[in-house]
Image 1 (cartoon, one colour):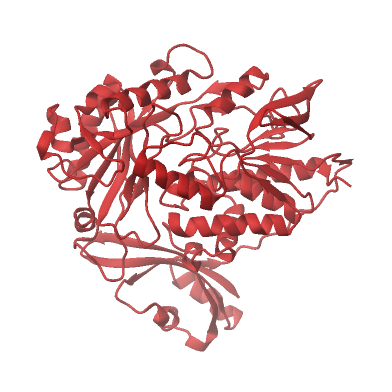
Image 2 (cartoon, helix red, strand yellow):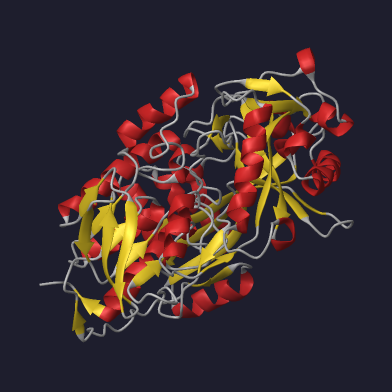
Amino acid sequence: MNLIWTNLRVPVEEDERQLPLMMARKLKVPQQSISNLRILRRSVDARKKPQLFFSYTLGFSLEIPYKEVDRVLHRVAGLKPEPQVMPKPFIKPEKNLSHRPIVVGAGPAGYFAALALAKAGYAPLVLERGDDVETRTLKVENFWKKGQLDIESNVQFGEGGAGTFSDGKLTTRIADPRITEVLETFVEQGAPAEILFLAKAHIGTDILKIVTQRLRQKIQSMGGEVRFRAKLTGLRHQNGKLTGVEVNNSEVIPAEAMILAIGHSARDTYRLLLEQGVHLEQKAFAIGLRVEHPQELINTSQYGMELHPKLGPADYQLTYQDTTTGRGAYAFCMCPGGKVVAAASDVERLVTNGMSEYRRDTGVANSALVVTVGKGDFQGEHPLAGVEFQEYWEHQAFLAGGRDYKAPAQSVRDFLAKRVSGEFLLPSSYTPGIHPVELHAVLPQAVGDVLDRALLSFDQKIQGFAGEKGTLTGIETRTSAPVRITRDKTGESLHIQGLFPAGEGAGYAGGIMSAAVDGIRSAERIMAQYNPAD
């Protein structure tokens, strides 16, 4: 019988190879009766630190008489039969596509949509405004070292999307069976197998670049095409139906189905869509600063020790609800053992973000500390008022940093005291460098005030968080899309049939996993309506 065992706690010092023996003893069955053991999930339980445990969810087969299985199920907490998944019936669409489907964007939503289409024989065309990941990496490094920004190929734009230069987190709050499909695809393309069961799995930017290239190659091997430096510059539609897309202000490609998987920073594309009659609406997001601490400070707080030989660098999740304003503040995109990076995609606008490689070995922990903003903070009801809000504060940060993409910075203690840090400012991992300022000046007053109170709250949860070892840089604005490209129950744009907004840039996802899943869903919606073109 196939079973699932949840919340099995094992001291981290125990050899994982001994799991079958430990299970047999707890179940009171012969060890040889346990087979097909799979670790479905593993997380760290640090509630009794410094005594640490792994909490497992296991799948396995138990070969004993059925009567004895019933006794075991009633005796052991967390044990249950493995649920059966029934395949969905396939219904062949009545219509055929006249042209191959187009996917705009080569991030997680775009590539997983294209992969699903390619597997089914639809031969999709992927259009990406930026460069392939190898060329893009060179452009990004050139910007970090010399301040020379390519507005089409940077931390936000290019193959792999914004997540390529991040921690590569694979966590998500959504529950969807496609999550397993995404994780298995990552492993097939070179990601470590542990991502299939780690509760807080990540790939890291170094491995994610390799996986991204292999995803492209797989799409191409199944009949798909990927074009770089191919920017969407226009839509063609007639009687409310998509008929084609314009690329680079020159070429028109006929199409009646397109997945719009742009990133959350494609502001020029938002403006284009609005001009073309696509319905957009404002969406709340969050802005704030990036904070850095020595990794051992976080490890000591979370694990009760500076370093554990069997655990990687510790992370944290922090939230604060401000009773004065009703705003929420929280830590976002926490990068253990990472660094703070310059993430601008527009000239004269400064953006910070966090990044880690797979090994997470820089010794620096960083995360965004952000505060929610919404319609009450924007100027007016225009759909792009949130975009303009971002642009204004990013420009203020650019000016404050010295107009050369150095980040305005301040120690946490000095931020709370509202004084410039000067020569006492700690080094930062951010390149091209930092410039001491009073960071409240580059934030909306309401955001700065809430961050003051949030930092004091976070310091009660992680001792030293608001102490002398913390450094702040600004500004962090790209937490999520500031707009939503609205869609109906078929997944299509409200006003243009055949246009399928998807992923984070469309306002329907928040991270690599949810974006990839939403991309697959959009591909399925096309396949539910159309057969491939002849």
